[in-house]
Length: 271
Image 1 (spheres, helix red, strand yellow):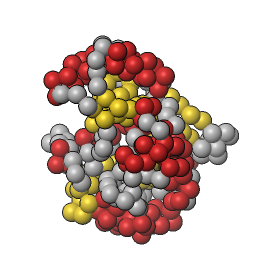
Image 2 (image 1 turned 90 degrees about the vertical axis):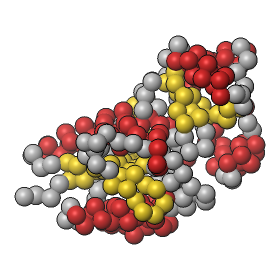
Image 3 (image 1 turned 30 degrees about the vertical axis):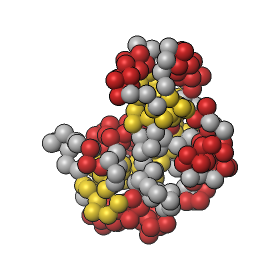
C-alpha cells in the first residue's frame, strides 16, 4: 500500500516557536526532513500576514499559510495551481471589529488593544523588537487586547460582542476579538485544495492531515485533523479532545516537543 501524502498544519507561539523567546531552532531537524520530503507545512497562527511572511523567510517555507486565527488564507503564487498570490478572507474585517470595540468602550468596557498601542508600547508589552511590533499591528480581521475590567464585566463584554456576530478567543497572551471563524476553517479549506490536487496527480492515494497546537485556541484545528498533536505548554492541559480523537501529546514543550512528535510521525508513515 502506498504511504499516505502528509500535510502539516502548525500553530506557532508555544508550539513551533518557544513560548518565551519565540525561537524555532530546536525543531530544525524535523523542519529539514519535511522540506526534503516535500511535505507542506502550513503555518496557522494568530500572527499577522507580515509577521508570518518574515518567519516563512527565516524557515525557507514556501507553502500556503493562515493568519490571525483563520481571518485569511494566503496561497502564494505557483502553489496549488495559482498563477498569482491569492488571499481568501473569512469573517469580519478588522475595521468592523474596531468599530464594535469602540462602541463597547463608550459603554464602559475597559481594555487595551493593539490599535491603542504604539509600536514601542507593544514591543514593551510583548518583548518583540520594534519592527516585529509594527508587523503585529498590521492586521486583517482581528484585534488582540488586554482586558482591564472585572471577570463579571468580561462576561457582559463577550455577550455584547456575540450580539454583533463577533467573539473573543483566548490566545497565549491576549484575548482576540474576531468574527465567527476559526483556525479550522482555513485548514479545512486548504486541505480540500490539497486533496483535489492529489487526486489529479496521484488518483485515490490517501492524504493525512496532521495538526499541532498547544492551547484551547487550537482545539478546532486539532479536532478537524486526522492526527492531532498537542504540544506541552502553558495551557495544553486545557485542550480536551473528544474521546474518538486520540491525540498524541508531546513530553517536551514548544519546538523541542514539536521536533520529537514530527520526527516520530514521519518515521511511522515511512518518510
